[in-house]
Amino acid sequence: MQKTYYDPADLKKFGKISEWNQELGDAFFEYYGKVFEDGALTAREKSLIALAVSHTEQCPYCIDAYTKDGLQRGITKEEMMEALHVGAAIKSGATLVHGVQMMNKVNKLDM
Amino acid sequence: MVTKSLHKRESDLANSNRQLEILSNGIFQDGELPTFKNKISESNQFPLKAKKLEILQINVGYMCNQVCEHCHVDAGPDRKEIMTRDTMQQCLAVIKKTEAHTLDLTGGAPEMNPDFRWFVEEAAKAGIKDFIVRSNLTIIRANKKYYDLPEFFKKHNIHVVSSMPHWTRGKTDKQRGDGVFDKSIKALQELNAVGYGMPESNLRLDLVYNPSGAFLPGDQASMEKDFKKALKADFDIEFHNLFAITNLPISRFLDYLIASENYEDYMYSLVEAYNPTAVAKVMCTNTLSISWDGCLFDCDFNQMLELPVNSKAKHISEYNEALLEGRNIVISQHCYGCTAGAGSSCQGVVA
Image 1 (cartoon, chains in turn yellow, brown):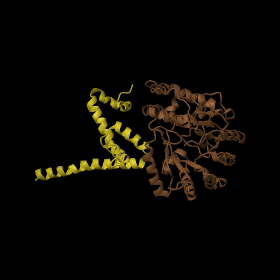
Image 2 (cartoon, rainbow over the protein chains, first blue to last red; image 1 turned 180 degrees about the vertical axis):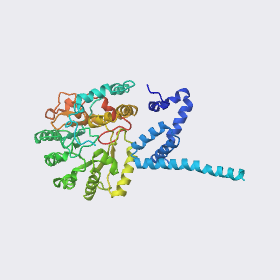
Image 3 (cartoon, chains in turn brown, cyan; image 1 turned 120 degrees about the vertical axis):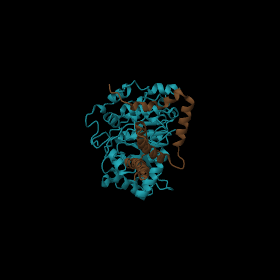
Image 4 (cartoon, one colour; image 1 turned 60 degrees about the vertical axis):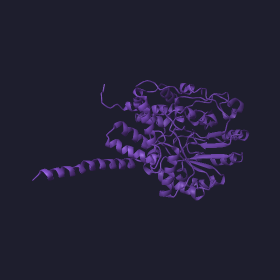
């Protein structure tokens, strides 16, 4: 039997986290639901943001969930990939921008 | 991309009993799905009863110029089942004596029935309020003899309901066949040109969206907004409403679900999205579906699964309102498809 840290079937059990703390679980899911409603941003735009963040967070459950959510909303694979590149650009930019700290440190320590 | 019907391929899924066996027994690894019967019993909605007849949905034949991946009719150019003029006469006799306000012609491509125009003209005289033709659009561009269909529809004030799975070429052609998108766009422009779908026009043009894969349709209102924006911007096309319809796990879509190993997850998705408030509004409660050979069914899906009405009157020639009204609707596991989320019917969401 294959054993992995991530089981796709666990995504269906997400709601069960409330069982060990109903109050906080309910509060989270209420907040979560509100966040994804149409607002200044459409639910469609929020779905694409969520997809990009799912990748930068490297959460397989979130990737499955928001890929499916995107398809249900009629989001195309081209739009999905473009959103993913936004996440990737920020992730790599965030790595590179720390290079300034490295450069500062080198400049301070190096003769 | 499929090119032949399940029947032509002699697939075991062409057999309705095989489909029902899969739907009832499932292929689930971790337990069984709850039965639809038990599910609706929880909210005291079993048995589901037929109400007053409002819609007569007539399938005039399984012949079609397209072979769509998800087709629950298993329609295609290789299907020869076609309604005869004699059976149409029997339907006309019923149309004249019922108070049903909507006549919904479907197929296959209903326009390919050689008696289609005769039937439309005769039925138009019978006083139907909403006369729907479910057109796959490409038929309008398939052959010279169909080029005047937009004018014909207009002449009889037909409500045109057309399939359009997406506003992009790639997703549309993947589900419905290469070249379908371009032909559909051209057909929509021709319908617009005679007045169909324009904001103030009485010539109704609605589009039908079916998801192009193993997922449920999203919010109908949002999808409609996106379709309208994209079709207007890219092709200057107008239409009235978008009907988001859930793909039911039968026939070619069931074949696709099993082949792509999505069947189990899809069924769970339908059950998880089960909405008890949609049950009372499912289309089978006010609709009668008539097959090409005149047999009576609660809906188009039951027709394809060969599950006839639970009534002594089983053929259009035996139509009897007293016998049919209040009948128990025949249900099976595929019915989850019509009660998922906001519900699904031939007119889009129901709840």
